[in-house]
Amino acid sequence: MILEGDKLACSTAAVRIAAFFLAALVFGCSSPAPGVSPVADAFAPDGPKVTRLTDGAQTTLPSDDGPSDGGANAAPTDAIAMEARVVSPVPAAHAPFPQLVYGGGPLLTAPKIVTVVFAGDPFASDLQAFGQSIASSPWWDSVRAGYCASDAGPCVGQGPPGTFVQLTTSPDAAYTDSVQGASSSVQGWLSRAIATATLPAPDANTLYVVYFPSTTTVTLDNYKSCVRGGFGGYHNSMMMGLRDVAYAVVVECTPLPPPLPSVPATSVLQNATLSASHEILEAATDPVRGTGFVLGSTDWSSWPWADLTVGGEAGDLCVDGFGLNQDQTTSGRFTVQRTWSNAQAASGLDPCTPTSTGSVYFNAAPTRSFFVLDVGASATFDVDAFSSAPMADWTLAAQDFSHSTPPSYLSFSIAGGRLTDGGALIRVNNGSKVQVTVTLLKDPSGLDTYVADGAITSVHYGRTVAAQVWPIAVMSSAFASDAGIDAGAGARSLARAHFLATEVRATKTIRSSSRRYRDDRDTPVHALLAP
Image (cartoon, rainbow, N blue to C red; front, side, top):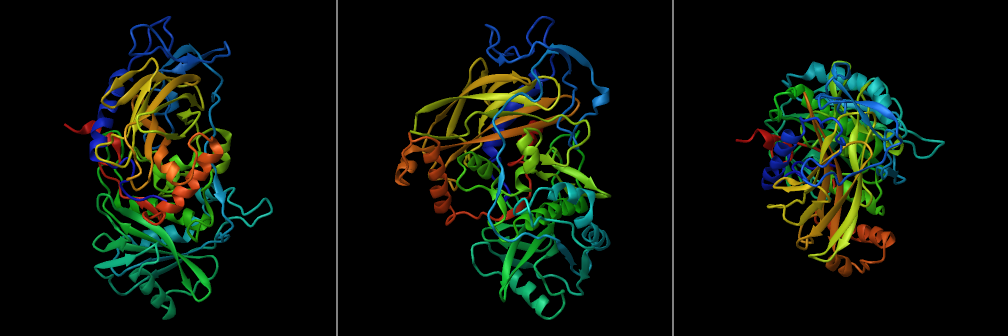
């Protein structure tokens, strides 16, 4: 589930992160001198402080113009200068990615997509074609794979050709909806349209996908469509008689400009099908919010991921918060989103599917990602850099991503690294092991997440820019104590803290399923272009 403008959302945070990206640009385009360790600390005068685990094998690595994660911003691998280096086997060992856990609720095993547009929609014919084919496309087969209630099924499967309805009326100027049980004019309108046979009657696999023009404002609890800090789409469900009826709302928002000249602009139609693909996959795997495939509520290592994405469903975890189009792929002529694969995550490689042939995924995983600390206290942990194939060094940063202005809940240092306005920085490669120290500066229990969020950010600069994050979260000992948690009791205690805090904050925050409307507050690379 993702709300617009979440953890990457503070404008002040973007300023701090801008400094990191500028520093990365300076240090990211230089190759090490002959005889110098490729992971030598680019900042410390007394030499490298990074441990590289190697098997003694000689191989080749691309220069900084090397492969990235294979998204729309990736450089082709056949145009890469190569340089001999000693590296670890790829990918190097690292902590596991989280898994989406099935909650026992319904799944759409043969999703019947009902595409609904209003009179005068300029994209009607395109959206009709998209809805008719998307649930039986190769993209769908890739993203739905593995989402089964058990080994014996049932599973999210292919759907029949979609149904299309173009209404003869225009939408109202504004609608409301809720995932908290408040009144909903969206649900009232949808119920009337079904009852009057304007829309086909639902069965257990029906998913209504309703497209609104950007001139209509949809308010989901406290969040509005197509505005900074708002959303571009979401999915929800409602009761009709004894049946849960799943639906998705997509607003045809005008996309914001790309953060870098090398990133292709996204059209309104591309943005609409990108959002729709996100919601269709999440509605199929979690049609009744929180009962299908979501991050486990009692798995403490999953909490930072849910916080940073403000979600926890299959689409949320793969949204590219940097705005580099790394989450985009195509299904025929339509732009769609790459989404979370439990199988790929378990393999330790790129967890988002489908992947591009020849693409190289890189990231850096902390050995521990959730902490309970007193204010002023610190914790030190290892971070393991890894990549799916040989590639050039990249810049690793440890940063405060707390939902606050200014982002002053956490501070970081990296052994052998350099402290900058953009965070603590160091150069790494596959097999690099660095020590990171996090300090809790003040109690985050007043934030809507009740924790301070941070991230280990990896950025590769070459002909294109690629970036990945691995989130962490810090809870104050005072909040843990209030919840009856012993801060020193270890992982089991942390899991319980996660569960209790989630229950408490559910009364204060929306855990809806939405694709955020990006802006310069939640795409840190935007700050690189700021004067």
